[in-house]
Length: 76
Image (cartoon, rainbow, N blue to C red; front, side, top):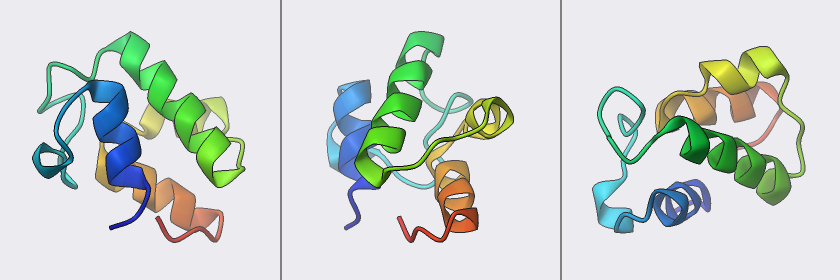
């Protein structure tokens, strides 16, 4: 398992087994606007990248986080 699932699960305060590719703002009440900011900050710190504001806004699911990281050459 990559670091992404445990990172998101920890911020959302959910068991890692409950977090999957479709976990996001549309499927999980725990993914609030505040938690979104925390997830973006956690991703930037963990993977040593900076997301543009547009990228950050688009990262509304685990799947999208992976896609954006892949554009930066990071397999998450």
